[in-house]
Each structure stands twice: as structure tokens, then as C-alpha cells.
Image 1 (cartoon, helix red, strand yellow):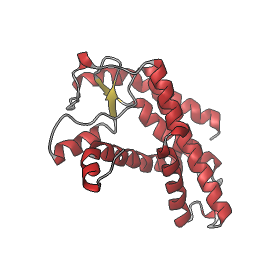
Image 2 (cartoon, rainbow, N blue to C red):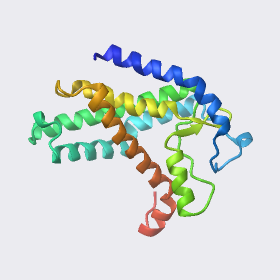
Image 3 (cartoon, rainbow, N blue to C red):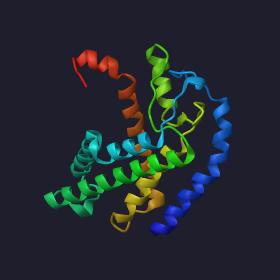
Length: 211
């Protein structure tokens, strides 16, 4: 599968799910930290700033890319790249490329659809309620009216970037097999990131951190 075919499939998935996502938003309930009428959507300038921050000015991109490359180096994935310094450099470049593609797809698709790419913590108490909120908000977001909707931009960017990344891996890696499998793993990473964001106040107090 070439890049053009991969992109066309992703666009088809995005557009065909858009209508159902809008109707789904009315039936989903999450303990939001705001009422829909008080919601303030991001303007164009704020979206641009997020895009720039996500793709370079944020330390999270570098930490995630280096961590992913180190993980792949440890388990020698892909094996053809070996565990040499050259292999680590290729894995690091691959991780950076995939993360930049994912962030770019997420931010641009969210701007096009009018959804919010930010994570909002639960307006509730209790470990299980907040944990459930993390799971829900790994697949949901808010539209321009402050109502819940399926987070198609995030889902598309997760699997899209993983499928594209598989295209510069060795030839036996395919976008529809290893690419989709890598997307499943990346979805778990997104959930973990939201978990940290949800419980960041408690983590700050526990570790005496300030950021």
C-alpha cells in the first residue's frame, strides 16, 4: 500500500464517521468541568499555538520520541535496524516523524471539524469515576458548542500516523497489519497520558513537584 492509498483510506474513514459522530454526541454523558453554555472554544490563533507547541516547543514530544526509540532499541524492533548507534538513530528519527505526523493530523483535523484537542479533567471525585472519565475521554471530546462528540481527529491521527510509519519500516511491515497494531499500542499511550493529566494535582503533591 503506497502513501496515496493510505491517505485516501484515512480520509474516507474520517468523512464517513463524521455524521454518526455528531448524533452520538447527544447520547453521551461525562462529568464535564463546565456547562455547554459556558464553554469557550479555541480560536484560530490558539489552535496555531497548540500546533507549534505540540510539534517542537513542548518537551513531551522529545521525551516521548526518545522513550519510544529506547524501547524499540531494547527489543530490537525492527530487527533489521540492529542495536547499533545507527539503529538507534533510525528509530529516533522514525519516532519523531510519527509523533509529528500524529500531532499535525490531530490538530488540523480538529480545526477542520471544530472539535477540541485538549483534555479536560473530570468534575467528579473518586478513583473509579475519574478513571472511567479517563477511558471515555480517550475516545471523546467536545465540539464547538461544548457538547460531547466522538474524537475522530484523535482516533484518525493515532492510527493514521502508525500506518504511515509502517511504510518506512522494512518491507514485511504493512500499514494494515503492523501499522494498525502499532495504533492499538499508541491508543494505550494516549490513555496513559490522560491518566497523568487527570491525576496531576495529586501527583504534584505526592512528589512535591511544581510545573
